[in-house]
Length: 422
Image 1: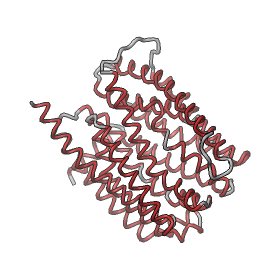
Image 2 (image 1 turned 120 degrees about the vertical axis):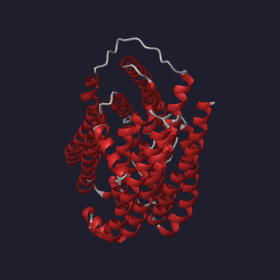
Image 3 (image 1 turned 90 degrees about the vertical axis):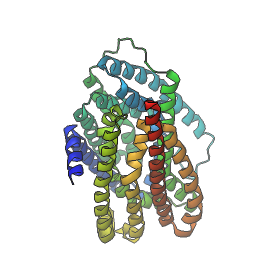
Image 4 (image 1 turned 90 degrees about the horizontal axis):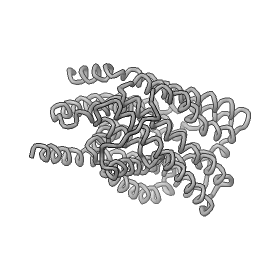
């Protein structure tokens, strides 16, 4: 218990309570925003918007070709504030151009895809513009973390979710599914505008990155690809349900049944977001890393037991919060909760540790293998078991990717330490 106590105290010492509180509010507001959309918009129309949105969601991590990911890892290795700020300017300028290129490619590609649901192409085109403000928003948040200013990092999360809730309510009420689409688009744009000045960056300063440019871009690219494929592992269920069952209402059902399990992924993300810069700065300190891993895994093992017990005994009660019509899918809900535990104990930790040692490509390879397995499994299980089949596939792969990440990290980390000593 001393390990857990020390782990929590260190987390709080890095303003983790602010990140935790803001994330709780963000998930709550996002959840309420989803409920508002569900109540104000016809299920079938909402299903079409969600189908298009999920196409864009899995591309958002590649915004800016992943340079915001390079900013976090390489920025943590820089010592001077001037250097960190210079790297921010470089990433912002290059990333905006890269994001515009990605948006153009998505729009062009949409004209060559035959969508099953009417209106999908229009929503894909409109929602593709989320990529630019989302990139700017993530770069700003990354810079706050590099400044060890987790309070403002937390404020960005809280503000973004508040703006999302208000805009979804107002715009969905007056403009239905079109309003909901616009709300998703403008939220990161408004939040970015509010916080960029808080960084106190001199944009006229000159800076040359002290790293190999190819290595810098390669790291961000592979990290973004890994995040895209990982995101696709969550999104692919929605896409395949729509493709194999051709029922927009089933898309909505699965989207909302998975809402609570996927929302619970915020907890490991909170700890990792708070600690990533700290353990990257100390990545060569073997004792520190070993103690961090032991503390993290013990803490989330205990949390996982609690989550499993609650979801097992109260699945139907929890689903009634969404709508009584979701009660028949209680088994699907519990299966997804079992999968979340694999992320809690393994994947959330070791995936980020692999990135911390500069091995982002390993995350990409693991996620790519999982994606292939996902497609194969879902093509068999969805026609046979419906959305429960999608849940079974997702849960198994959550455990698979976590355990494989752990094995690869320890192998590469020990190899890295031996190389440093040699």
